[in-house]
Length: 282
Ligand code: PAF
Image (cartoon, rainbow, N blue to C red; front, side, top):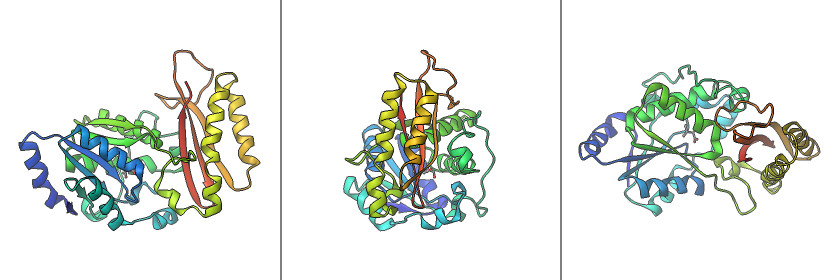
């Protein structure tokens, strides 16, 4: 397995692949890989000639220094996990200075409003950071297809918009959320949960599922009130937001329309660990 840490090192490799007209499948990650990432890598292996997994904890997308400091970085374990799937995967693990050309700062982006609600509202500057790093990864690695999990559904839409606006020639593929057997969405942050919080966390998906059932028969306002109440009564989980929104524009639902599809989005604190999840409602 080849690991590259600088743009200079990987540039000729990318050129070589392109000359041979091989398709590149990119799986961008921040490491601390779990089965959700692995399923993205497996899909990429099936669909493209050369898979590149990037491992980079991107400082510019964190609005909270403590969250950045505590973000898990089990690099050796990640490499072993990837090796077990295929020795042919290329790993790109740059330093912040290298990928950001010395100045670790994000640009400002407009994503037609997709960046404003939910994660954008509660994590100021988050999507500027995501846009900045993903654009650099695309420019450096020139993928034909890039794979992202639907757990970060808002991020997925933002990246599709980034590519459309900057006319980057890459296909963006969203892949379904992978869950633990008790329903908790797989996340690199799950490993930071205390035993008691880990036991409590499946309540998030359970509540989303009930919200989905309610959405068929009750108004969106009633569903939102009910969810808020469930978390207000929960001794361990603190609700940051629950929002039902249009799945294409992320505009908050006003009145249900038969021609639209909706999704419910949630962010919850379990101790100091922030967990997000979402579910398609119709
Ligand atoms: O989803 C993630 O892990 C990150 O936001 C990404 C896309 C790798 C950018 O840093």
